[in-house]
Length: 474
View (spheres, rainbow, N blue to C red):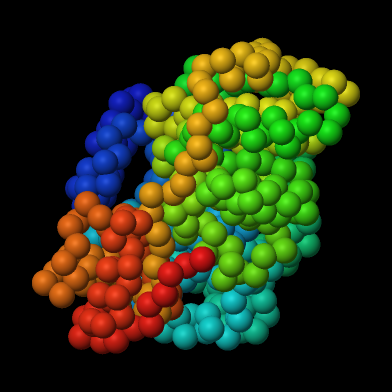
């Protein structure tokens, strides 16, 4: 049975949440100023050791909500597993692990391992053998390591299921049951879910002890709605592609996601957009993991401007300043629509979502409007076209470079930046964009105008006194 948790006062800032001075300093460094509703309501009971089940939409700040209490209570002496975070996809696991590392940057010796598919399980063994404090991963790969004996869960004190509803939808229930059967019963159990279907209620009843239930999903959707301009265009059969072309050429988004329901559709649209002169790539479940990493890195650092994606593949993508979401296909579930449009209009910024709808799909629109309590504006393409003449297709301003060294070879963002902007590199800091450090490789975005110079400089020079393979990411 879930209960309410009443904090002693309503927190208005992170200091009110009784976090340590070290944590508050890190939050300030990372420009986190005010807690979101899910953070205000979740952090106090989590710090108190309570089980929590929270409804929170994508983009509501739930990762920070469960990460800060974990880090506040972590014991760094001895590398023993203390917290396990399960996610439905590798992309979300990567995002969560990256956020935990950022927030834990002032904890000396903190070890975070990411366990998911897409790379051989044996490549993940060294970090486990050396000992870890926190593991983030997908249920299948985590269970694989537990069965192998390479992941010892006997010391686990907290387990978090992030996007628990999605994991059940994707068929992970059996794996999660086996994981729960193996971990200590004396633990803190935390579920975060965008919705609260009966399956989540049943799992909470079976796995949690007197949990605090937190509901901010509906409130967050209402708060976000004014920042996301929602529109739909009714499309005649066979005219979706032409409509998408017009929208992208007129709107000229700096960064956009086009959502499709099928993998083959995503691949075809991305290829057609490239042929049409637009900067685009596809993200779907048939890609090898290295290709998924490549596409996501290019999109995050603005080396491509349009990402064409399916819902499962796009799970966990968090891109700052996303201008536009286009629903090429309406999703089957109205909740999925809310997830999609929630990727734009974040952090108080405005965003736009345009859906291409055929007449026989209007019942889906009605379901969406019923869920959100808001009407989606109907627009006509000729009205949009009147705003601007046809403009040439915009290209990405950045180029991504691959470097064959990463976290495991002690590579840091400052090392790459120094190699590019130092005496041997000669680039200005304004020419260098986002730097991503992975375990065994890194990506750096550089301005297209200096890409050849940057490539040659890194190939001819060294980083931290070592030579690395460097190439353009295509």
